[in-house]
Length: 118
Image: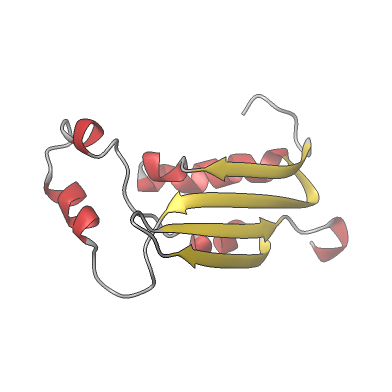
């Protein structure tokens, strides 16, 4: 991101992370961490699923489609679960709300620790 470290009080990302390759999501979270001030808040809204085991129909479809078809049929979107990734990045006060709807979503809110919490 083309911003200095510790620039923002809040970082908000809505329906972006599910467009990234799973391996690239930690890198995006690292970028959010860098530009967020200490004690700053991060809010993520993503396509998601509940915590039950197994794959959703949409996830199974995503896995079997030829990669070249995915952007056209699904907009490259699939459910992601980022709560654990956010915690591993070092964010604190992580809260996840699952929104049960036609396209299930999650809202994850977290804080970058203040200097005294580090």
